[in-house]
Length: 314
Ligand code: NAD
Ligand code: AKB
Image (tube, rainbow, N blue to C red; front, side, top):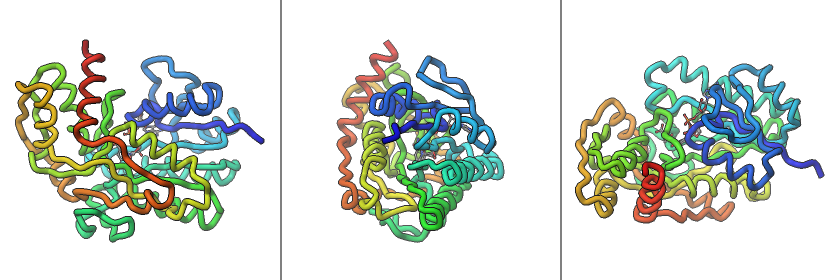
């Protein structure tokens, strides 16, 4: 049987930085190729500079390393995308279509392309947002995620490509800073708290949003990718839930560790984006199909973030 070789595109981002060591542990250092527009800050194994909007450069890496699976993590996220919508659309769509087309033409066995809670908009139920509902996103990022989800389904139906995807909630992690999203406050707040600095939050205190701890997000990704094909009933993207909380609830959870910690609220343009997203997610289809179960709640995630970042900042 041919050994799997994985290509991770956008490997230096928030999720790639944490995913890479997990994939290297599972598949071996020589069988995971990291690629990104920017070089990694530390030595992380095999690395290739890649602009994934360029199909020839992508083909070259796939051929040279005999890649069998692609994890496509490169994207412009919700807040950053609004600064230049056409650029964000072009980058998100061009990279995704290049990955799908290269996968089809070069015998790639499995492709992972994440979607987001940003795929939902005004007309989706806000609480317990179901797997199947109207998708009318408010951001260019969300529009690109809905379009990509439909392209994934198309490549699966038309070409039999084994595409897999999760609609990640806001991902909270200590390994690196997030890259320009609306949920980024939930990471930045911890860095200020452990440095014993006040934090200014760009969302209002009662903004309830779905979030997930990185450990859970990675486990969900690996479990989905490992699941037998006949367990995968969703070829657009699976709803995925971890926890939901507001900035005020997160502040209170942090204050149990740092009673003097204070937060000022100055909502900006990201408030409108957050208000267009679900408050909580129904992930029962993922639970049913491949046994998804989150492990972290607000209390355990807060404890873990503070422990890890305290070690990092000291
Ligand atoms: P990020 O912004 O932290 O990282 C993206 C990486 O892609 C960066 O390192 C960037 O340099 C790279 N990149 C950008 N353009 C590229 C190009 N043309 N070619 C190659 N690399 C390029 O993003 P992330 O948070 O790690 O997100 C990864 C994926 O997960 C994205 O699809 C994102 O939409 C999705 N997602 C993330 C979250 C979250 O909270 N982090 C939530 C939902 C969905
Ligand atoms: C963002 O806020 O844009 C991301 C996401 C939820 O997709 N974290």
